[in-house]
Length: 194
Image (cartoon, rainbow, N blue to C red; front, side, top):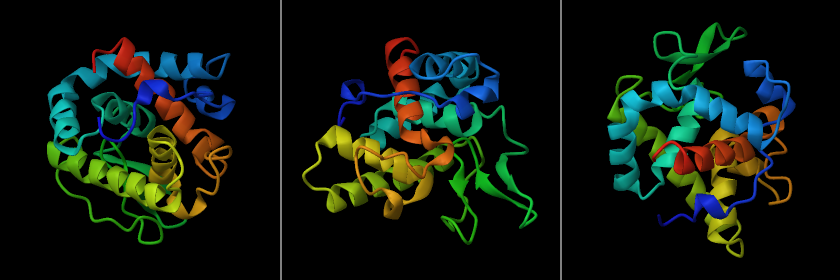
């Protein structure tokens, strides 16, 4: 894949906060792997779409699967395709398996396609590629893998809050977004057949 090798990245995995989604008694890579495995059965119905979109955009399908696992638990955490309910706005912030940010004060994207469609996965992967490229421009001396990790963090919080590689997840949800996604992606690559 043209955006760095997901298997070369070191990761701390899921934070305690993220691990509590599944009431796990542990955090870190082990928690990320457990959550990825929990979602693996549901992920199967999206495998062909994930592989197709990965090939189209040069993004490792294991990474797409990992974002789907983190964002929507392979669709299990969604309500009619919507997620991340904002009680202040009285509306959902995210659409689809990869939770495209539709909040006008956030990503401001217009949702494309059905929540579990290839069109949706294309839109979300285009957003991911956009952020990887933004991090490449912002940090040209980072390795391809570091830029990939920064792009994953930016997918969650925008590129403006990515300030250093050492603290790449400082402002992400759970303070672990890229580390958790990478650990899940490594599990999907190694054990999930992506």
